[in-house]
Image (cartoon, rainbow, N blue to C red; front, side, top):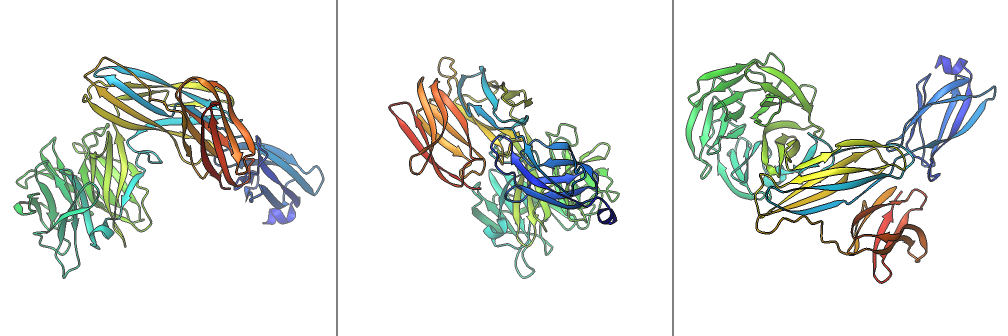
Length: 531
């Protein structure tokens, strides 16, 4: 403040615009580096700094989707006002094809080339990953949320487990009602409910399975539960009181059990302590599970409800007790974790962490833990393109070790640094055929517009279309009066599937029509631009 009052005292103002379209760049952060003063551009792209203390200074500008301007030197040169216009660069990405559909013989492989284009004026960065569902984000981000409290009408759900193609959830009702075990189908519809044979107000706090029976922990014991009728057919003592978390370890034929701040014990089916992992105030256990696919050999996973409100996921190497942090889960405000499971049965070729969250409203939330799409290989997995540059990305598919007469699906996620919100996607479908001659065929292309994504859009939309034969084609954009706004494509193209960007930076908000024509056929779709 003293520097601002006694310094140069100049007025620095101006506008940030898109270099390609001259459209204003809103919500850009403009920073005077030397005094760390910042300003956010308004809806017209304007910014203002009053009482600038320095006659000469450096400015940086950043906005998601645009190439950052790290250093720009300015000087008042003896004047009291300085106006400027700063032009930001940005990448634009499109690729073709955006759908892959192959038909392979057993043990056959094929390579599909994807052409990536950067038609912007800024450098393009992108990276790919193979996902089991079209879900934004990366590893350990949330895939799905199910409002189980509302479905079951139970205010105190404890844990969730996927077993025998059903979801099993334990609930601790209020003290005047019985504790319940709920069985739901894969659509999260209640199939059966059973009263627990439990001894405490909360009932079974966590669940696990050895592939044949369910096991729940309550008080000082593990309940062995018949999944046909929920009867307790055996009880295994534990060294804890109360015991609140459990996981079955099939590799060592052990149960791992723990409570909030206790050590975690490995016990056999008779309750004998075989192993022990010191807690030493390192975590506050809400649940544990065994993840056999961990690449580092840290196969015992622990969820910790930390005192600061975070839900922290850790993993442990059971022989040495060594711990490492995995992630702080991106949960909703106020939620705490209950029992959880890591399973590969929820999504194809994807390990998912499924946890019963506890709050005012109880939700089951799933997070992507790991993927194993061994039949897809992408080269390169990430790359960098200068403006007006393109490249080929190879996607190799193999039918080795897959079932014949089955169809396999995956989604290639492309994360990027363009102004388009969200990821781009390539849908992959592979059919393994053991009854015909070897063949590899792309999708049976049909003439016409397929989709516009996103729609509505606020900057750039992507128009997907197909051609069933080589022809002269035009792809044009019109307003609702039929006036042509722009020509996106005009020329000969071969049969195939294509994706072309529509640039809305210089257009006003409103509804438009995209028209695809080969001279004798026309396909049209509406799209909406919202700024």
